[in-house]
Image (cartoon, rainbow, N blue to C red):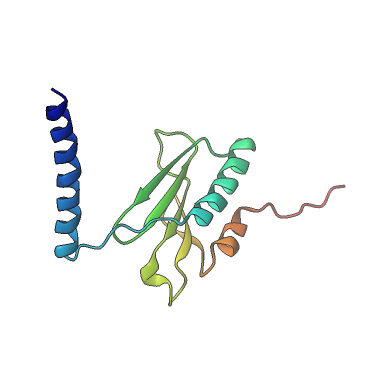
Length: 127
C-alpha cells in the first residue's frame, strides 16, 4: 500500500517536472512576478489605505506580460487602482504604473518607491 502512495507522489513530481520542461521547450515565457521587496512596499501602502478605510480587498495576478496588484473598495466591484509591473516598458516610460478603475494612467515610473508616492497624503493647511 505504501508503494502505491509513493508511486503516486513520485508520478506527480515527475509529471510536474515534465510540464516545466515542456514549457521551456516551447519557449513559453514564465509569468512576470513582483519581487519580495516590491510586494512588501505595495502591501505597506495597502495596509495604510485599509487602516484609513479606503480599501478593503486586493488581488494579485501574475500574467505572461505583467504583474498586477488590484485594490478594491469591495470585492464585488471593479478595482479602484491597479499597480502594474510591465517589464516591456522598463526602458521607455518605466516598468511600474498606477492605473485608475477607469483605465487612466495616474503615475508611471522606473522605480516603485517613487510611483507609490502617489498614495501619500498631501499636507493640508490647518486653520
